[in-house]
Length: 279
Image 1 (cartoon, rainbow, N blue to C red):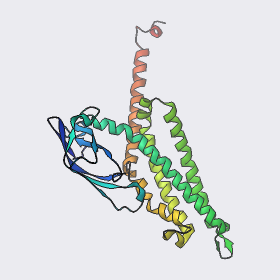
Image 2 (image 1 turned 90 degrees about the vertical axis):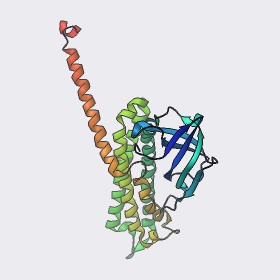
Image 3 (image 1 turned 180 degrees about the vertical axis):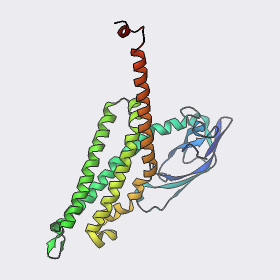
Image 4 (image 1 turned 30 degrees about the horizontal axis):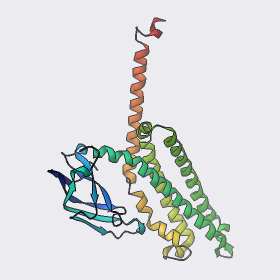
């Protein structure tokens, strides 16, 4: 994010925007775009946000053909000498990175909630199918191996849902500043948990449905579709690898901050001028 290459050069009363954006959700439907671009030097301190309108000359969009989530309108967008009025600057110039970062926790949280629900759909569809499909003279649910698959899915989904509820409670009771500071690592790790559980459930439900999970439409259509959309949850909003690293770094940072606060508190309590010291 801090190294993006789309540029906007201020010329008089407008910016000249050049560059390209990929994987933009709803890009083919949107009339307005919030565009992160480089207005200053390298790194995170040189980024700004501009409000760009679709009908501005030089704006071109093309739908990308993705494996799943077809309704998202994932788009490739190019900006070729687009003139954007100076008044379309969102917030302060070169402060865009901070605005983007403040939104990431909420984006990841939304992906978590959505993904765990998808896992539950896999479980629900598997249960319904296992109750009516018969093999070797018995329904699927009567086979121990199928019950094991269902139990494993349920175990993972319920544990993940509990973590999701905990995170929801914290977001609703903490101040915005406290939540931003303390929940970044938890949200990152929760996203990994949700997407890994989803990947597991998508695979196991496909095994339960057998060949029906490999065809579009019919009894296994939900399972087939969700199998195509696993990567659309595991990568956007921060890939699993990046989220795992972020979770550890955030936790370490919080521990160091707590250690510093404790040290400062101890130093203050030992001050000879403090009431406690005089007593």
